[in-house]
Length: 122
Image (cartoon, rainbow, N blue to C red; front, side, top):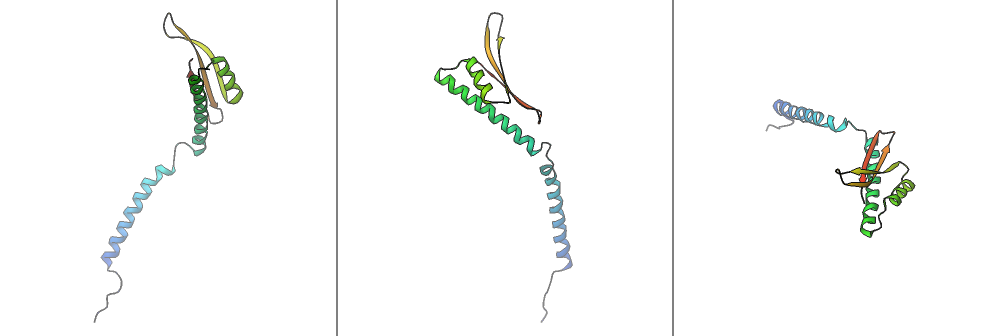
């Protein structure tokens, strides 16, 4: 009676070949995921200033819905509550005869060199 123990040479070579191909795919696909062009710190900072702008926009929509929007008071609100904000009230001309007051709000993170700008109209 013959006992079969172990694997044949062909089975071992086939298994090693498949493992080598799988490892090559993992390495080739894994490099772009590990080497991102933007650091996680920059992404977190960008997320933070975008979140602040969303908060300002939410307050703006709330004031519009309540019918209490005044650009001067909204500008003052932004300057008091957001220390990285720069709010500028200006007049834009849409054509020869029409002008409109707008509030341009700029949030910036100087350390990360990122800026978010929104224009609010009455």
